[in-house]
Image (cartoon, each protein chain N blue to C red):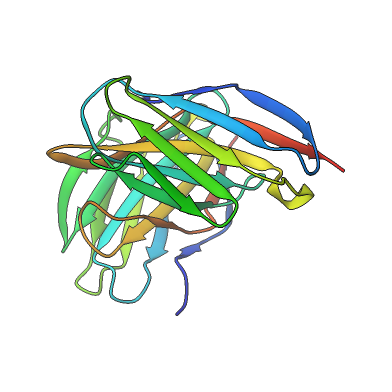
Length: 113
Length: 111
């Protein structure tokens, strides 16, 4: 069974631009979560989607948004990029909305210049 | 915000020795999970322990959970160079299914 895939793997943007990251979960998994990882703040939860509905949201500004499609694939968007948005963005999928382990993708390394 | 605080932040041991990492958290949880991350890559799930469980084993890994102290430990026995990685605990709260990760322990195994 194929794992979680994320595209692109690396991305360089400039301040003020916007970016869209994509995540394809493991086949059959209906829950997709997004995390931001930085050296200073560690792993921070962004949001979780289950069956196209956002179930949880972390403490991030409205510039961070996401969605999930009917095939469970998910995208997250960051508008008006800031230098502090440079991070590794990780996507994870799981079979159910809770009570089970998450399977992570390799991440998208975003650099904002 | 981070739920779990891990201790120590960094640990270096000789290959073959045992490694113990601790995690403390603040709220009532549904389960606690341990993950491993090799440098700059995605996380790999190791073990999930539910709030009504006290100990769980998986190969060379042993996890304990003490809900009265709001703490968990991960023991890796007979360490190998390939165990070099960062280890994170993550808690899933009751009624809120998001995972909240700890600060991580950086483990280095010296050959």
